[in-house]
Length: 230
Image 1: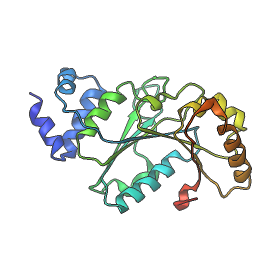
Image 2: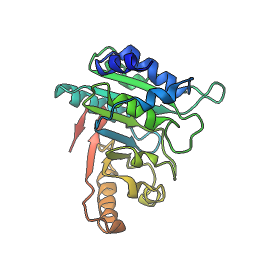
Image 3: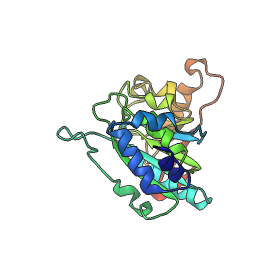
Image 4: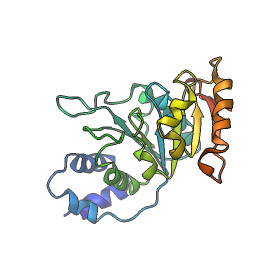
């Protein structure tokens, strides 16, 4: 029953992809059979997480720009807070990524948390599996703004990028949020602000002995709205 839909997704049919994501998202009848028949595909998943207002959506927009400029095809899942009335995505389509909605090499889908406390959609793993067979070179998952325990993205993404800003609170709050353990890369966004250099220095000092990790966690300064980094 589902083989035709799977073949259409494999051939790049975005309408079928969107329809199948909706079936899984809403747990429609037979969605488990669809998932069981999906072929395995190892598409790199990049997780973007961090506190509200850090500039995650703007950073994702800049990443899409860089990937498209390199001839890549990108799928984006944006997890938004849920409406308390209909459980839908509260923010809906992302205004900051509006430049890409008509680009044939970019697919952007907003999902609601639906009360999930992990900063992700309850069916995010299953939806990611469907996205992986759609021919994207990269899949970007942007979480809802995290609190102190909403770090589930680390278990799903191949690379977890934690976005912070200099005035988001002192560095102890960053550690308290559990972000030190999950970050593969730290991005200090809005780095043109005066507190940025001090924040980066203190963050690097904390990362050096943190949790006896063997690898060095990069700290990158960005001004995402200007598509600049260093």
